[in-house]
Amino acid sequence: MKSPDVDAVLRLQAPRVLTALLRAGHRFDASERAVHLALAAAAERWAVTGVPPDPGGWIHSAAARSLADSPPEPVVGSTDLDPVAAPNADDTLRLLVFCCHPAVSVTSQIALTLRAVGGLSTLQIARAFLAAEGAMDDRINRATQTIDASGPAFVELTDADRAARLPAVLQVLHLVFTEGHLVARDLANVGLADAAIRLARVVQAELPGDDEVQGLLGLMLLTEARRPARVNAAGEYVPLSQQDRTRWRADLIAEGRRLIAGALAMGPPGPYRLQAAIAAVHAAAPTAADTDWSEILRLHDLLVAASPGPIAEMNRAIAAAEVHGAERGLRLLEALGDDGRVAHQARYLAARGELLERLGRFADAGAAFAAAARVAGTEAERRYLERRAGGTRGPTGEVDR
Image 1 (spheres, rainbow, N blue to C red):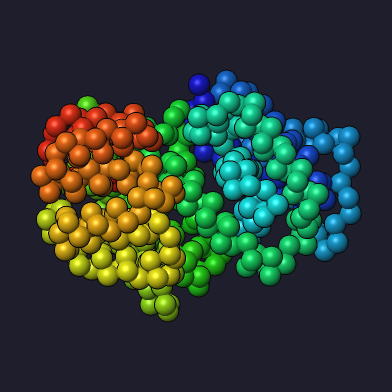
Image 2 (spheres, helix red, strand yellow):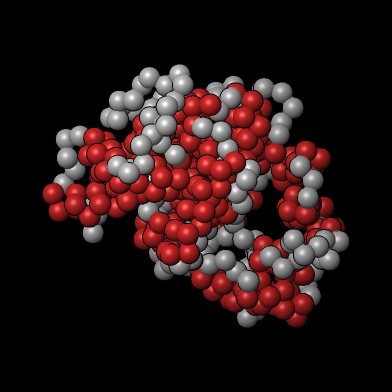
């Protein structure tokens, strides 16, 4: 079993060594594969011998041996080829942009980002997404080959390319974080949420004036702050309104709120800033009863205007129920009932069950909770929703995301 120290070193060195190989002119697919194999060899060896004095050099040498039959192509304008030198933030951002190439699917972008930039193993990624290791490895290899066939060389990426692909980078990081935030999905200490936060910090450091980057990082921190309270001592899911808020991480809340305050001062807010602002309102309430739902509803109105869609409308309906009553919220929710993008989601069904229960329609509420349990994303949520379906009339049927 690898120690946490070995894991931390591997995740730090993965983008550094890959950067060195790419700047030396090696192809992306061959370089990424070579680094992946070198990391696997290092993990096995270092678990016995410990981390060597020069881990980057060790991994680089192992990866270079894999590339012995693939000499690099000349790279114009690249002179810094020191294999042990850490890349600057721009290099890491460039790797993120490469992994989020528009020629590959979002799922492949996520997997490639986690392996090439996050330093996670294929097995860890496959476990996190409940997939077979071989299938995940094939997916990543196809993605790197597609990027090599259709994308620019590593050192030729322009500022325009980065600007055009930044939304995709933020989307991928948000999806990685969301997956890691799900209860019981962080199998084998994968740490998807931690990886997403770490990479978001890199992007924010390189682009400190970008409001949406700052908003995304703030959203992650404010959401991650609630993790300690989302499961009780028995391993049971605890919805937001019932969480022990003294267990929320005050350090992450303080940092997240500072980021949001700065981001909101940058101009008209975008979707990530608005979501973060909503999270900040929740974080500011010492108890669930103190939540400023009127402000949350106002922010949801802005979010629907800035980024319209059924998810945004569903969340606005839930907020509207807190401000204007269950009947109003239920009407808004049921207006989305024909939209397949939300109508079969656990959060939608659970919210509908909660509002039906508030209105005294207990049989209908039980059916809604039962339907939500059947599509719940985690075992802890499934058990919680089944209890609600069985007749427990708790104060909330929400699913904390």
